[in-house]
Length: 330
Image (cartoon, rainbow, N blue to C red; front, side, top):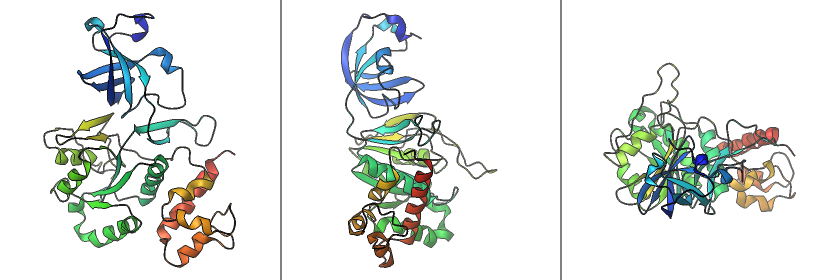
């Protein structure tokens, strides 16, 4: 395999191309160009420009220098990354939250839509985690945000409870789709929401994202695994991030399952702005620095008392704010 650093300052180039990053894995980037998909590496100078985030990631629009045929498996060198319209990010799991070592991990750049996939059962849905995803998506200003509840075929005896759990999100404006990759329930409606968009599919491990991809686009042939019987936790099926093209137009970003998410660049005092049903009531608080926990004249707690904010989401806000307060370095 050719090491780009061995090419010298001005390697012989075939041409310059523009493209979309459709796959990232271990420092290699597959870029979809007018001449097809080209496997690329990053020019060394770019690697030093910004070390606190992912300089190139899924969904980026890039410019590349195509290399001669003798460049073996590496067909190009990425030389420029276009400015991103938006990014869905989290604090990199390997970095220390709230410290100078904190590092951004970009899940996807420039998505048109986020679909957060959870299972009705096996594993049981963790709505606190969903709330963290929603905060990250609101922070990123993603235009369309949906919740997808898979494995409904396994939850028939718990149907009322599952729908009651997720109805909280429907009431505040997040569309919730109930589907089954096994039976096909809801798959056509889900497919239709994806046409012509770059949509990120993400959620915890084991919720059936890969099975959903197979159901949405037959013939993809993506590998699936089963839930660990010993732990009832999901196993990671997707080992890398990839934009999967749809026959009817658009892409689905298939990403590895996420076991935990700490929203990137969210300070405790601004968290209320990313809970969409809480945000409108903040202006009615008596104090500008109201934490909505104990202060007199709190517009948020008044709305809670009137039933305009669900107790579950208010409690979620308090828990996440406490986490951020504990982690954040002022």
